[in-house]
Image (cartoon, rainbow, N blue to C red):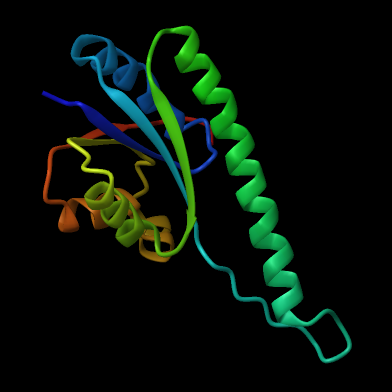
Length: 150
C-alpha cells in the first residue's frame, strides 16, 4: 500500500517523534523511507561595515545543509540496521511547497510528519508547516502531534 514514505524532518527531536510510526509502516508494507530536510533561505541584513549579506547567507545555509545531511546519514544507518530501505534529500526552498514538490517527483504514497503543536501567538508568528502541507496535500498524510522538548 505505502511503497514510498516521505518523512520531512527539521533536525528537532520533536520532528523525529514520527519515526517509530514510520518504522512500523515500513516493516508492514516493505516501504522505502525518504528523509527530507528543507532548508529555508535566510535573509540577513547587515551594516555596510559588516559582512555582506550574501556571504553570511551562504555560510549559514551551507552549514544547515551539512548538518541536515549528517543527521540523515545517522538515520539511514539506523534504518538500514532494521532492514528498512531509506534515502536522504536535503533541499533549499519554501518548506511546504518543497515537501509537495518532492512528494510528486519521488512518487510518494504517504507523507508522515510530526506536528509541533504550536498554538496561539507562536502559531501566528511561526506558522504551521503541518497546516500548510494539509492544505496542499494530494495524497495520504500521517500527522502525529509531538509534545514536549524541541
